[in-house]
Length: 298
Image (cartoon, rainbow, N blue to C red; front, side, top):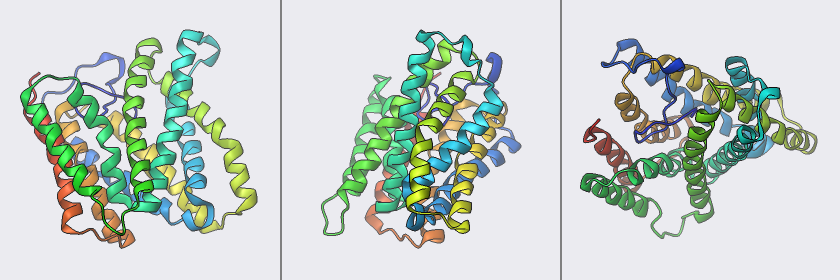
């Protein structure tokens, strides 16, 4: 999730101000599909390491992988940063780590599909709050109905897990707003790379503590690294490629399918079956996002 635009989902801007493409490219569509699937598969594979190193250990490894990739791409000149540039980077680092930790803990408690759907409310809220159209008010009501359906009282409801999913949503919304500030003050991907590096440093003692108290098995370590590669490295690099070939609205529309992908991957890969009410709630959130994008005016 490297950046944000005015569409419903956070979109990275094209490098050096290159114009957005005007039509969808087949290679771009294939890349979007692969990126979305990679992201959810990474989270599902990472969850297999939860019994050994917990969500905290998996997130720590994911932060290390994200920092390595973003540093290689962004090549930040840290010594040239001023305090005006550093403070939003530091806030972004905190939000980045909190977002992933709350999401992965929510996945551990309520499942992949529900956790990702709740997190998706973050960018959806940013987009709906930025407009004054009646249609967007209707979209907001549809999304709220979906959330009420997902969080309805029942004996098996895990409200802590749902709360963590909503915390991830708030962090994603903050991530979008902070990324806009960082993008205005620091050229290229240097700001995002610096934030990822700081976040990785913050998780370094956490990762060491987890490794000492719960020594990871080779399988658990492999699952955590796979989560970092599939959920951080692949989506980020894919987005850089995609936004040169796919218009931003189409990109945002396709990203709105991620909650559905998460539910399907959770169902097939992790055996996390959802009832009709959960599918209806996920569908409402996705429909609200899609309707907002499809009816938006440039």
